[in-house]
Image 1 (cartoon, helix red, strand yellow):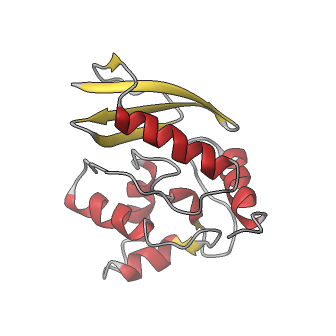
Image 2: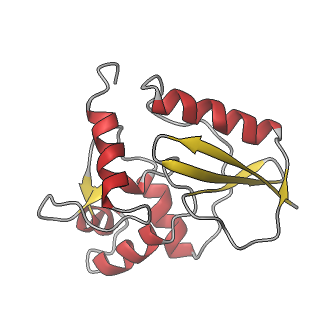
Length: 155
């Protein structure tokens, strides 16, 4: 059973879900999955850490994750977890890091399927030319998150 809640954040409503005490999604759009709305310890902890993040008191998340995707997607998402707070890398950087330098578009596609927005920081991935590119929540949300991190003097 997937338990979920909604969270009103500075970037809009986030949908947060867990299964078997593991976080399975943080999304700006409502997942089309059978769910039961219930605040569990995992979801409560996620909300606490998101509050700290949005209040510039947290630079990384310490949550139990269940990344569901293809082997390639999971490899990309695990690589995203290593991007330092307030830093950005390109899609090409990620492709090189996972040992497949020609997989730039596939990295972009995996980013687009990231089920754990913010927690798995796909917002820190930008174009090779330094420009903001694609984000499920829109480029204004991506820019907000990057500015939040860059302006955090505690980082």
